[in-house]
Length: 273
Image (cartoon, rainbow, N blue to C red; front, side, top):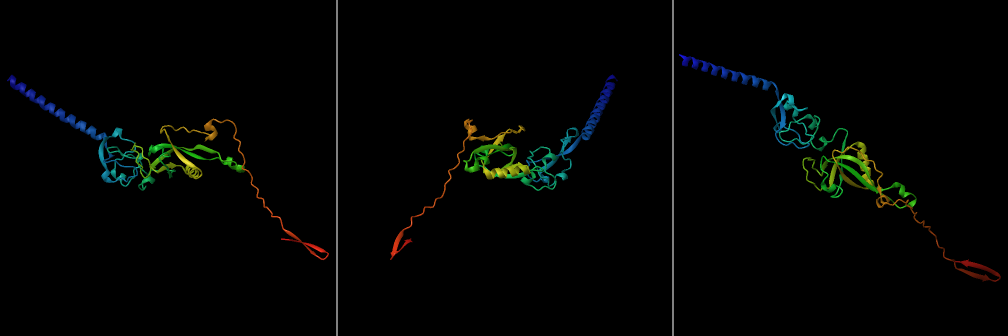
């Protein structure tokens, strides 16, 4: 009798335990379902300027409390959008990394509002030995002749000066990829500038030779310089005496005329030839 009662109590406890487990599981699932949402992530690496297609994205569960700002919960909103920066596989796709709706693909999607893209020719020295990569910032140096040194036939004085600072490199040659850290020697660099900066760069390119100076990416402070001249380079403090070019006067040499005295009777005349 005692054994039967013990078995009954054991069976009842087992049933209650199983019921509690199922109830707890249902409660946890309900809470988990209520605190998660769907977020769009990249299935493949999406390059800069690429147009997003449905095959490139997938929807995954994401905690609602940790949803990234600007994340997409509806995949239809991503159809035909263009990536403004590189998106890695498994990374949430956010509005900040996309160009405005309706933007066509290509480098034009990368140019910020109010900015312009301009390409300048470089060589292995001017292009900082290939270390000026997309996403880096550069200063632009011009070497030209001072206008004030050309007056009155004076000799020209060379000057080198930084004319533009903290200019973003958009692409090198035809490659806008910002994930590559290997230097690449190219013959052209595309820069992002304001309209006023494009005018300065175009003028600087026409009056002298350009050089790129690689800049620290987290250094936003502008630097004002007077430029470097030959005297400053050599440490010469005395003023430069500019000698005017000698004035050459054109003199016309006249050959002496030949003359003959002609005597006719008492008259005398002179014939010149």
